[in-house]
Image 1 (cartoon, rainbow, N blue to C red):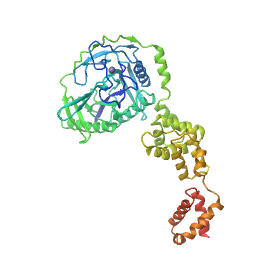
Image 2: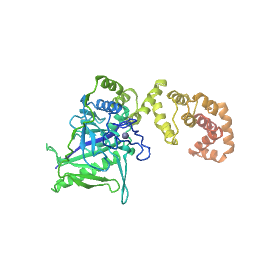
Image 3: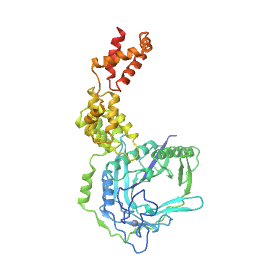
Image 4: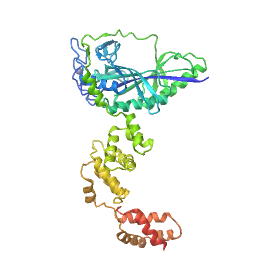
Length: 470
Ligand SMILES: [Zn+2]
């Protein structure tokens, strides 16, 4: 018997706003607990929420980028439930009329995942459980969230992983959220069921929670698909339940069994008037969107002769992709620009200390690559110039001049160093004449050392070979 896995994802994304969704409290993540709070987000009686325009704009932008139909009539509803992290005892959300519906996200694999709905809501507080008591931080109550729900279109853990990565990248491209999972700016719940292939009705679904990374989501789904298929094979009924992923044990555990659906007693939020989103707002957001990652990916594949892997790394960060294109506009050597960006450049960036800001311009970067291609800087010196140029906007020509790094390629000048090295290293010279090829690399290295890394190693090798083989 063959089985099919059916997965639906529910992603919560924190929108990139300075203030909360219904009050002017800051959304700053680093603030000490319970300092970004006010009577509105703490649910004091008699206070009035006011919708944050920026949150609405960003939400519309995401809906458009995910090809949703926008419901222009905005109205919020109260989702009533009691929980210690929810001081109002209700969450302002959208239920009957979500902001966006009927969208889709195309994946590089060619699959299209339908988006069922996207709605705006406020976040709850954060509970911090200690041994015998719990702490509560209300800084997060009232942070604007977007809930993005897919249709059950995903058929493997790998596909869920691809969707999540692509959704995140799309949202980052349009500046609607940083999607920083470590800060909880992107959270994901999943539903998974299995059925026999060819079956039309869905199997009993299980909800999974507590995955802290996309890899965690993929691992949890892999485990759960295996567990459920095993149940089907053994004719053990699958129970509708919520399970928690334990990343250490690599297993899911039952959290709660759902007897029936929750009754949240939704009703329209009386303190927020409903209104119609203006065409101008939608037009402005549509204009902002620009090129999305999938389009950029296809264009890069088409325009530059790069490997798929190179393209994927370049487009994985909008800033990196822009930097690449700006540099290519200055020096039309896409392959070399990509090599230097994905190699030495990223290496330099990874070794930066916290707080150090990258200031190098695409122009300066292209210049370094040009110096290298013109044989005026050897590999080592070019890397050194790059590390010096990274944190300044100082002109590269000036840096090279100050450091005296221009490559020495002149045979006459280099021959002097070569003669010195031959004289000082009779053993290596002897080894080479007895056929030990690696001895020549040692000698080249000695010349590089003497010239403080400025010699052109290719020319040095040529001189050495000519000199020793005669
Ligand atoms: Zn507040």
